[in-house]
Image (cartoon, rainbow, N blue to C red; front, top):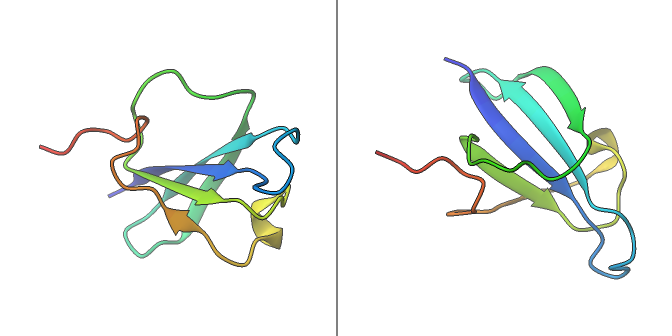
Length: 79
């Protein structure tokens, strides 16, 4: 089963830095199958999970940790 995950890369210290959005396709074990940067914020709730890193990093590979955002507006409703 594949999951769609939205990763938000922001900077909590410099709010003027542009927020980046990355869409990830993942399998059940958490392995990344496909990584796709988005041009802007998605408009519809179509993601199974939403994760955020607010350290000001510009790429997922340079991040040390992520925070899971439960009940985010872009997360699909359960049920």
